[in-house]
Length: 594
Ligand SMILES: Nc1ncnc2c1ncn2[C@@H]1O[C@H](COP(=O)(O)OP(=O)(O)OP(=O)(O)O)[C@@H](O)[C@H]1O
Image 1 (cartoon, helix red, strand yellow):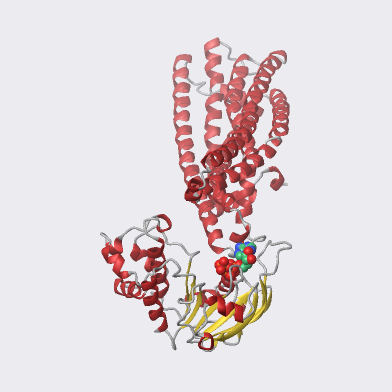
Image 2: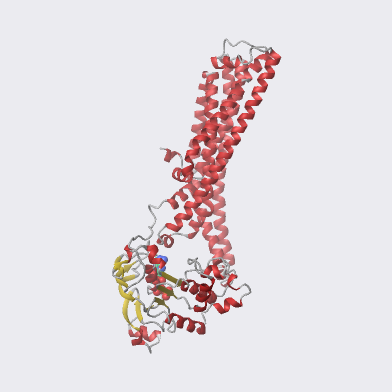
């Protein structure tokens, strides 16, 4: 039931996590502060009785009569002073408690916001890689940068609502004790206002979802403008991109306008309803003959109750308005419909014989009727040897790498490592023994040294330098004013493509991996440097295994074996020596590659 009533409840529960146990303290502080306020207001009764000279408590409820007796031992002047002093003391104490509650709720809010962001980042790091193949990055960016803040705000709103609800309960209890008849009238009135408010708030859900989906689309456009700067300029698409972006931005504005105007109308409407209720109570009290001091105390209590009720209603409509955001955050945090990370418990400490693809068939997730990418592929990568995987564009070479790295898993068939299914091997241990250099793996924003030792934190500067020398990167790094401390910028923008590739290669080599995978890892490197890199790779022969993907004959020249792929099918696996004299095209022709 609550799940239906309060959108995003699971998100809030997770966000509050261990701090849920602090909520009773929030409630108690709220209750006590309001009780102090209620007593202070109750003390208005004897004050007014003295001032208007109406000291008769016979027609009052026992609760009102109790206040009427306060300070009855003093003469009227002293009594006024004593009661005023008590009221001031109560106000001071109430505000100290209210401030303590503000500190407590702010602390809980900060922790809850942090746990939402932390849970989102953990989920993005934990989820199986195919998730990123299926999802729109704009949607993910929007959830992290936008919707997560709304979810945090929702936590703050709920905390505020708890404080307001505590105050409302106490003030209502005081009203009840002062006059049950008038309180009954108030309760009916409040229920009617609440009902009207709930009906109107429900209409916020659809616009909230619309805002969220338009925000996702806008985030995609923003990503596109950031990443496609060159493309847009060289093809002269600035005008068109501007129009598309403005369209997406305007759609957010329009959706936001609908949501905010509906949200904005609610407090106004409830203010009118509350005012009607207020006046109705005063007139009703006069009709049933409630004494003047009690009416005043009742009205003051009602006046103090009103902002709490309105805050509760505003909180309600805000939560409805953020339901789209909460749903998005809940969706990302929910692991049940996401690809799982690779499993496996068999320890892996190094390759002993080799890796065998045995009848592996694969299609990318969510590809619907799309073609199978690998058809029953069978070939072998032998330990200590270098295996080239070649084939025309789209043949499935990178897909083989994705399977080797366990970014994706075969649909049929099996990948065997020393005779054991790769799916049963501990993925962390497996990955710790392989290193990948590919066009997909970017540099991180940091220094060159940080990039080379990324994932190998214990590597010394000397080891990083050795790896850089092997990757033909040391020379150009040394020429940079800051050398290894040069900051490469976001995705390595401060470097040339060939320089980036050589640093990425050094990053793979510094791991001294058991299996080195190079996927078009040197295609931007000049011929001389590439020849030197090839010599380095040749020197790994015998004790280390290398898998190379390249369209260049020279890059695979040091390889022992060659696997030829065509349209996702293995056309053959042969020692490269048998084909040594052939160019790439002759090689494809010989193997019947289309
Ligand atoms: N993330 C993906 N989702 C759906 N299909 C994909 C995805 N990645 C690749 N494919 C498809 O899988 C097929 C093989 O792609 P793959 O990247 O493995 O080819 P490749 O041989 O490495 O090509 P290239 O030499 O051009 O890099 C292609 O038809 C491609 O369209």
